[in-house]
Length: 205
Ligand SMILES: Nc1ncnc2c1ncn2[C@@H]1O[C@H](COP(=O)(O)OP(=O)(O)O)[C@@H](O)[C@H]1O
Ligand SMILES: [Mg+2]
Image (cartoon, rainbow, N blue to C red):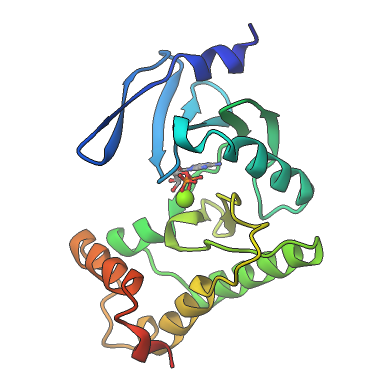
């Protein structure tokens, strides 16, 4: 068995109280991020990470892997090295998600927003429909650039307005002097729930 495949096979997820946890993993793996369809692990002593999907979302490994292949060469997206049955191996992006930037008080600038917009436009030129772009899927890197991760929904047909709404919130709210640049996790989660229930519509009009 190949190395990456054996690492992916070492992961065992438990599903309890509507959330996942990993009960076992190879000692070369370090958990770095939790998503709705997968967890991501850094492979120690390398610059790559392993995204291992939960059983229910296994099909997304191929789907997301193919999308990464489509944007290959665009520096705003991690490069993928292996597409497995339930996993992807890709560049590990060192940095902080915009979600964590808000929690830690790391300032998000207009340049970061413009760079994200540019990255999105490059993926559109490849015929994709960039979707599901939210604060946890944009990483602010050490050299003050941005990278977009989690492209699983970039081929969906449905129009997704999350990035448009985030940009509106950035210019209408975040950039205002009175808006605190550090926000508690609980407030962010509350905003997220209200947004998902379409209760913040008036802010984006
Ligand atoms: N290439 C990467 N480099 C660094 N961290 C990553 C990378 N891919 C994913 N992550 C981390 O893992 C989390 C979950 O991965 P993600 O691809 O967003 O999963 P999901 O599709 O389930 O939302 C991300 O929010 C991020 O913190
Ligand atoms: Mg995600």
